[in-house]
Every structure is written in structure tokens, then in C-alpha cells.
Image 1 (cartoon, one colour):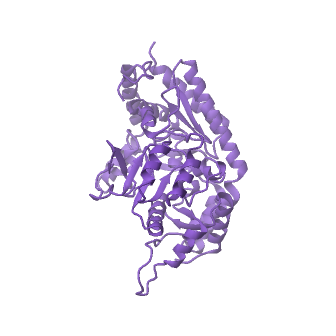
Image 2 (image 1 turned 180 degrees about the horizontal axis):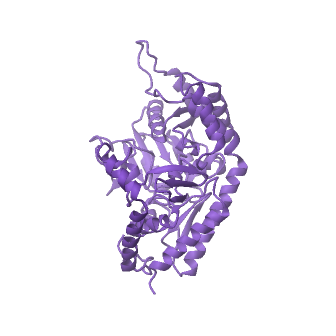
Image 3 (image 1 turned 135 degrees about the horizontal axis):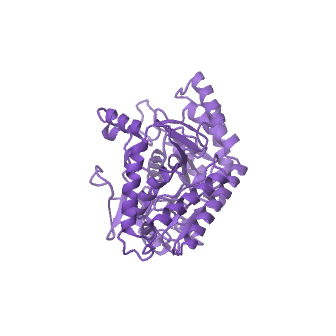
Length: 458
């Protein structure tokens, strides 16, 4: 972001650049073994990592991790980091949780997967139904897979081709949602997509009910796919009445509605769907419910479940059904861990506690901004907070992106890492987890204040 941004004028860009250079050098000096391992890894893995995000999400050399415990992980150079990224919310239970480890160990010893159901899957589905309101559930490995199946079902049910998503979204690595709006046209947002990947996706602004109605009135939209709060351009909250308006419009025009809670399931007991009284046709959740085990899920209404039942893709030469499922989906291991997460860890009291920590984090950051006379505000929902580089919170993706000042973000993250705090991915913000304490939150806030003091103009 250029330095002409109206609310970052107090940031000294020269000092920021120098701090980044100094902190990068200090970071490299702290991780000699990680750097050596990367040289070895480059011979057999692109970028030296098993998955591109492990390099692409950071502007520092990738770390190689030795272990984790509670809210901390430790790299191979024995540097400990208090984690506020939480594996992009896939580890909100913290590291080495005894209950998760015992459930996983017990099931692994009995068999990780059978390509057949276990009683745990029934218990998990019953618990999800009680928490989130939809009666029927299916399981995948990631929210990307869940959204893929939801889109297929919606297209079959409605016999329509188009989906609607909102600017600033992230719904996984599937072609229909790796799309952005460019001068009123939907275009592919990344490389390697098929030429027609954006042909049946419309991107509109979050909180814009008029634009949504104009699109739905054309009669070709199968599904509106939305997060309850937008989480991939910092954090964008719905305006009062927005979700009620989305539900009314989708029902009026015969379009199905999916609430993607891959991130926000961690924000409240039963997700924001329950907390805000939403009534979608589908709900998607992922991130292994924060356990670290690879699984995701989607729920559906009774009527949609009936369609899924009647269109089973049977391997017997009969006409093909809906393309749903995967070899490792719904494994015994995933269901065992999901059951202990839901029944013993993700309790109402646990959500209440992390929400209190999130409020402490947001209040602390707000105070830091005010004390330094920065015209900024702190994003906040449940356990998550962050840096809004404006006095007013954004109402759509275009406004949300204005706070993604990557020079500022990347300098802050390496500064924090050198002081033992692992900050969030660039498009998000720090989040409290079950393993954090008030002292952890206060330490993060103090380090953030120290960072700002280093770069604010005298």
C-alpha cells in the first residue's frame, strides 16, 4: 500500500523499511538449522516445503518445527513461538492436547479407516445437528471439498448453473470460487484455472442487498455462498438485517443458501449460524474443528438430504448419481477426534473463555492505537481481533483490503517472531485459542505497542 493512505501518515516508511531489514537479519540468525534444512529440502520439494502455503504465506525463510505444546510451538533451533495464527485456525485447541491425542492414538491402534461407518460418526452428526440446527451431515477432508459438493448438490436441486459469492471471500481452492470481480466481470483470481472457471460465478459486494436482488432476479442462481462474517480481508461484519435479507431474497427467487463457517465456527458455540439465528440450506465447516486432524463437513436440510439419498452414485452400472465422496472422507480417525472435540473440548464454557480473551485482545489493541493517536480501530468477533487502519470498520471487501498494508504486516510479523510471538497470516488477524492465557494476550499487545513505537514518526 502506498504511503498516501489517509490513515497511515504517522508511519515513517523509512524507519519501517529499516526495521524490516534489521528484523529479517535477526530472524535468519536465529534459525540456522531451519535454513540448512531448507537447502536440503530444495533438492526434493519446490520451495523446500511439502505444501506451497508453508512458504508463500510468509516473507521470511520457512521454519521447520520440532514440537508444540499448549499455545506454543518450537522450531528445530529451539526457538519457541506463542502462536496467534493457530495454523490458520486448524489448531485452535492448541498443541499436544491430551484428549485429542488419546482419541487419535486409540483409533489408530484399532484402524484409522475402514471405508465404512463407525458409531462415532452418528454421535458427531447428532451433536452437530443439536448445535447448528441442520439435521443431516456429510464429511470431507477440507472445506474446499465440502464447498465443492454443496455447489454440485445445489446445481442439481435447482437445475441452475450460477453461484454468487461476495468480494473479499475465501471458500477454498475450487475453481468456481477462485474468482474476483474486475470492472463488473468475474475473472479467474489465480493461475492454472480452466478458461471457463469464472463463467458461472458472480461476485458482488458484501452487505449490498440491492446488488444481490438484481443478480438473483435473473433466475439462474443455484446457490449463494457466504461466510457469516468475512474473514479473508481482515474481518468484515454484516450490517444489521443483512443476513435476514439474504435469506428472504434467496427464498423469494428459488436460490439455495450456504453459510461457510470454516473460519467462524471457532467464533461461537455452534458457530455464528447459531449465535446469530441464521437459517441456511447448507452449512460448511472445516479446519478439523481446530483439532489439527484433516476433516471437514457440511450440513443440509431434510429436503436436500432426501435428494442426496435418492441420487446416490452406485457402482453397479446404473445411471450415475451426484458426484460426492472421497476415499478418505469420513474416516474412523476423523470421527473419533471430532467426537472428543465436540463432546469434551468445544464446550460452551470453552467458547465463553476464548471470547473473553478475544475481547481483551481487541481492547488492548484499541488502547495501543488510541495512546499513539493512530486513527485506527481493532477488528473483533469472538476470539479474533486485528488491525483496521481506519477509524471506521469496513463494510465490504474493497474497504477491508485497505487494511492489508503488507509492508506494515510483514514487518510486524517478523518483529513479533523475533520476540516469540507467531502472528496471523497477512489477510487475517491474531486470534485467541483454548490454550491461551490472559498473560499471553497482554504479552502480544505489549509487543505490538513496541513495534508501533519503533515506526511512528517522532
